[in-house]
Amino acid sequence: MSTAPSLSAWLARRLGAVLLVLWGVSLVAFSLQIICPGDPAELILRTRYETPAPEKVAQLRQSMGLERPAHEQYLAWLGRVLCLDLGRSYRTGEPVAAQIAARLPATLELALASFALVVVLSTLLGLCAVWRRGRWLDRVLQPLSLGLVSLPSYWLALLLIALFALDLGWLPVAGFGGPATLVLPALTLGLGTAAMQGRVLRVKVLEALGQDYLRFAMAKGLSPARIVLRHLLPNALVPMITLWSMSLGSLLGGVVVVETIFAWPGLGRLLVESLLNRDLPLVQGVVLLMALAFVLSSLIADLVQRLLDPRLSVEGSGV
Amino acid sequence: MSERRPGAGRVWAGGLLLALMALAVWAAPLLAPQDPLRVELGQRLQPPSAAHLLGTDQLGRDQLSRLLYGGRVSLLAGLAASGAALVVGLAWGVGAGLAGRTGDFLLMRTADVGLAFPGLLLALVLVGAWQGGMVALVTALALTGWAWWARLSRGLLREAKSREYVLGGRALGMGGWRLLGCYLLPQMWPPVAVAAAMKTGWIIVALSALGYLGLGIQPPHPEWGAMLQQSRLYMSRAPWLMLAPGGAVFLVVLACNLIAEGLRRRWQIREVRWL
Image 1: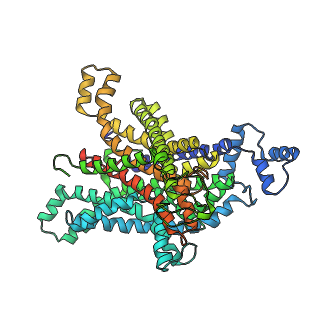
Image 2 (image 1 turned 180 degrees about the vertical axis):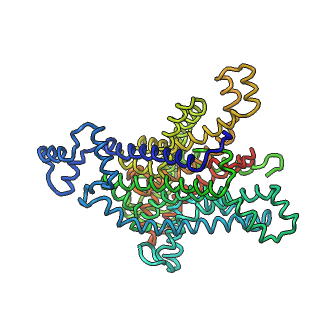
């Protein structure tokens, strides 16, 4: 356990694990085809308003390769996916990749805005609570953040819409375009996560406050600002990076609900629409992309953490 | 909150809240003023009144009755899914922690695949593919949650294994099962209890989120998430409709989080590494 693998060895092992996980993800995505009841060929014919006559269905099944054994289908599908060919939508016949590319920017915009909100707000919340520990601000912030953590995002969304859009009329109810439409979705997506991480940061900073290096910094008579900026934050930052990268996961997951509520034309809404339409290739495409983004973001977070904190490579906490 | 037992107040408050809500939905047939499915088109979108304490929905159904019956689904399915995820994940993680290198590798890489899907993505897709139904819903949510438990319990077990008294027990020649039952598992219990309270809240939110997206329990049967989704359409005409179902989910989750927070303080679990 105490051996210190070099960075490249660690990275190679991590990358191997990531590839293995992605292979597993591809298996799950493919197997949706198997657990999904109903015949895709029949579905395609129906959405084209053709009567699914048995011979037509059989012909289409043949051309789609649905008659071949499952493992052959999987290999063929995986081969296409690796060449970034995600197939065509059952419903529109358009390439899945193109549809995803069209929806991606909206989701990125929303996720990045919420992510920025999470980072800024959680830092503020955490530091405020520590700065005023035990005083009224902390005493108000603690239950408030617990309440925010417990708020289901879809209810928060409705409350925000009722207040800011219907009552006050400051912001649009839903829709996409311009900064005004971004405010409510980003708040909905980010507030709960921000509150959760503010709580974690508070605990982390309180832990750090008891450490020797801080007592020493205080004993040296450094200014509070210098202590916070030079000594406290860098040490609290390392665990926060993990948490932020994990929050990227909850943001990606939350995007599905928030986009649906606010009619935001992103990937999450595309996923829900295609699920309700039973448009399997689209579902598979979005799932693969989201899992890929999540896995890669946690890999990057690990890497950054390792580069920032040399202690981690000594303890050799690997995968 | 007494000094001797930190967090006890929170545990009590959360537990009481949860017990009250469980009691209310359990006694739904007694408490509900009406059949939750009875449609009365003449009584559409009525504001709260003596006859309908929480008003009526777009089909004139009594909102309070729907809330009570809907809670049965949310609480029961949520607890079932949370429990199933816990049992499977715990067994998985403990198995991985006890198994040799290869077994550990295989078990944990499988769990990693489960962890690769952000948030409720996996549950969403599975429910969408299986198309509704209570069993499908619970299975999908359990399949989404187990991997997290596997990773947590493996970590906890490995930590417990390195404790001196466990090594001592081993040196005394205690059998593997006895060591596990008497020394290792009791050590894991506190963090597991905290996490269980937290995760149950999360699963209940996820369950209603699926309902909101139209993928959960299918209408006309009441479910909190689906009720919220309906209320969205009548927000300006009947704003009271969205308050009750959302507030109910909020209170359940708040109760779970209060219990988790209280237990965390009680046992002074500061570590958040496994979150």
